[in-house]
Length: 347
Image 1 (spheres, one colour):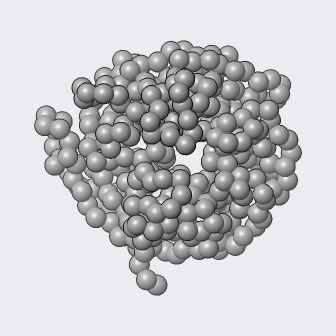
Image 2 (spheres, one colour; image 1 turned 120 degrees about the vertical axis):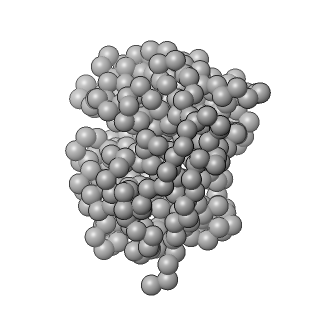
């Protein structure tokens, strides 16, 4: 089989600012036992992409670059990758309608398969049996054992989240007026929740959190009571336009959940990380992330690290990522040339 992926080792000692400390390379097999983050390098919603992923090993910040598809073509354009931690595999959906699968313990591609056109968002069920690929117009479910298409339904968007046991999948999107709840086994649409314009979603403490990047409102849906909470925040740009998101001065990007699920965090284009309580849904405030550069720090990708007081976030307009203290916003480490709009944490 022709190899589609290869790993190229980059030691961040040459990239991290002076004084950040020395780092050392891990063997690729260490990926199976140590925590890491993975994310696709940024690309436009349609068209060509760089065909690169970043795998950042924790806690030392060593990075691998993984090539997928073909750079400069739609097969190199992905947004939200999915990790099958049980089988140590990574699913990379692309705009070209091809999903690439790589074994994270080696440098070898195990396979690729045909998936829905323009589908560049992926999510794997908690039981690791199914990978869902989402485009703006459709959702498709594929078996992780043999890549067989299980079903496809005309429900599109750009954000997905499972409930705790994976029995229900929620689909939303920036341009969608509702969140669609489906039975993940059958694809049957069970309800349409009156929550629109989901830039990203997260399930935490039995509730669904949905971020509206234009309004700065975090909406929380309780499926047991069917109650909808709408939490206003200062993450608002009055001149925000979906067609010109990179020009925005504020707006929700990725959501991340604390390990104990008592807090949901949101990265903001204003340069702040916002906090929300999951017990009694409430907005708890924000911290400013600053790396001392002139101009705004537009945050996009976000993940909570094994140390619950720390997060990893991308400063999109500077094409770099940082490790930041969630209590005070202090930058603990800078990783130049490392960026993703959506980070996925494994372990």
